[in-house]
Image 1 (cartoon, rainbow, N blue to C red):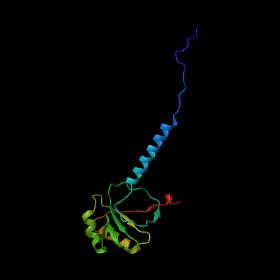
Image 2 (tube, helix red, strand yellow):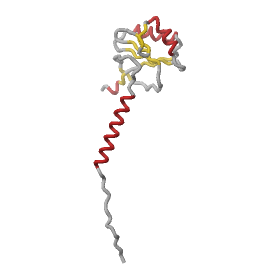
Image 3 (cartoon, helix red, strand yellow):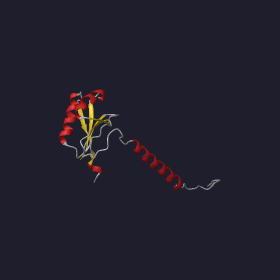
Image 4 (cartoon, rainbow, N blue to C red):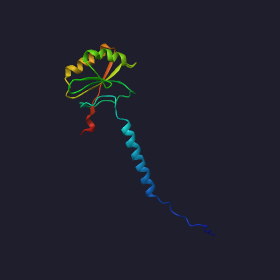
Length: 136
């Protein structure tokens, strides 16, 4: 003997409106998160392109050289003869310096600034660049 259910079986439905709300929330969250990930501790320079591993440091010491060959250490303008003292005051424990040189900066000025940082105790330098894979 076959018994009937008291309520007929209903198929589940996928509601599209709540799913759209969730997707917009995730989109807004990722957009706001990406804005907070921008580096604000360096002077704006036109970086050369290249492919390398990403730096995973919290707040590295940034040595910037602009197109007009002005030198900045963590957004503070310094002369070439002041780089050694400025780097020695701010050098992190690991001794690494991030170099952000404009693509049009004079090579000699960048090298002299890096050598001055080395005299201050910097044991490693990371060259900051734009990712060439993203500009294609």
